[in-house]
Image 1 (cartoon, one colour):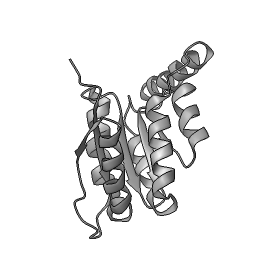
Image 2 (image 1 turned 90 degrees about the vertical axis):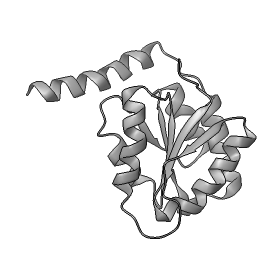
Image 3 (image 1 turned 120 degrees about the horizontal axis):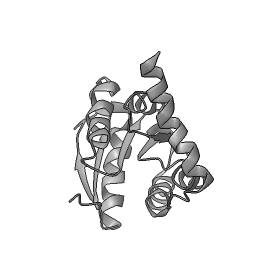
Length: 154
């Protein structure tokens, strides 16, 4: 059985400082962050770290994860290459809530260079607390997965 209070988290060098803040925020919210790197601000390639966390979510080892880079874009693009991942680039509380409620996002991607500590706290908390609404949104999420299946058949 998965422990849903454990959150894998990773960043590249540009998201390192924000990742360290988010780890503290997670602990304050009674979650346990598991840090998959990077462990300093030296230049690294974001796809290596995005792939690590995305593979864990894709396999079902964890329900949700967090990825951070400078803009959030590179992490998000990499994460969404994994079949069972629905990564969302989030820069506001409203987007955080909608990404969960309407899209059932399972990876939160953050633009570390553009968010304050207060922004990070509000976004992370609201993303974790938001619940998937299902219904018409469930039908749409299913179509996302079918798009993957259709692509394989072509």
